[in-house]
Image: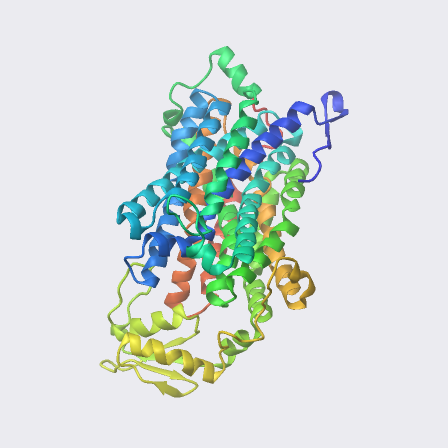
Length: 567
């Protein structure tokens, strides 16, 4: 972390350094929250391996689907965690509540590392995994709001953006920490030992369990640090005056006066911030791996470098929002992202996999069929079964990231797939799936071992690879967009609501926006790609919601920089 020895204007307009207590508040809150995000993102980074361990009763493609559904469960329950722990935070206190959340998160993560596989205990394994994943989501739903409110209520009025921006770095640093641990283990242990064969204890095997088990150390450190913290001054004052809300949920959401503010905060700030954040940190990783077919290690290292370079932007833009306001910074970030995502992802394709970039422009793939036999391929959770030949071939092409154009044929015409004018016969799905790959490679698509793709074999080897550096540069621009919208968001949300319902009211829009609109972005965007045959069509999801936030935010969001949080 950068130095916290900065200066903030004090009483009478004089500049006064950050106090020892204020630094302790920021460091304690940030470290604990980093560990929570580390725990939360371990699962997502290891979803493929976890799918094989806990959903081995299914075929490989279905294993991955169920693993992602279990991952999504953690996002879906986050708003409910916001309600449960937000209410507790407004009734009992900030410190007590996010001490509880970190205990739940840490215990759940540790138990995932101890959980036997499907081969050992049958259906209890995936059920227990989903329950633990939901507990993680509930805990995270209460953690972020508590940390943001706690820091903001300790911060000087005109430096809240800067102070709370340290909390904003924690999601990225937690993701980076999880990537660093996993990449280090994979390089030193080997893929087979990491995935299945490394012996541990109690008959458990697989080095992938080590990052989960190691979280117990992070939990102990986090709990110790948070035990030393004091309650926030705003909550203490409210408690002493007897002005705490007796029913924070009803007060926050049961009246139109406050409910309207929650909706404005959600659609005028958070939704746009969420889709920009998840595009820059998660969809970009998904795009590299699933669309551009970049190997797992290379993709993770490239993303990790972009996060390292760009993370300081959270603090910079948080501090900038103290000077110019939260609203203009966040909306500017949403607008910049919406206007430049298409050229950035085109540049990412051309740089990371130039053979593929040339192929999607030069290889003409047409799917001709009776329109009545072509249905929607929209399948964000990946559980639909397709039976029509038109749907089967389009689904197969999309899954292998082959760009195609759908052409309407006369009624009753059987499906026809042509590659640069040469037809690939269709008899059934499996046969077509085996035939399409070689035909596409012959037409100009890259083979799996194509030398033109970016590839690195270690973290620091990226620095000596010009192609990798160019990719990192493109990814860093997207991460900077993330820092623009995310750096000031905590201060903006804290300032929206009065002290008596602040924890409850700010947590819900944050976790609906980030847990639902953001968390479901990768799956939904890929479903759009599959439906259209255009690898860039999934970008319409973040672009649409980012622009929606720009419009609603510009009209309805009122700037509340420097508002008194004791009101």
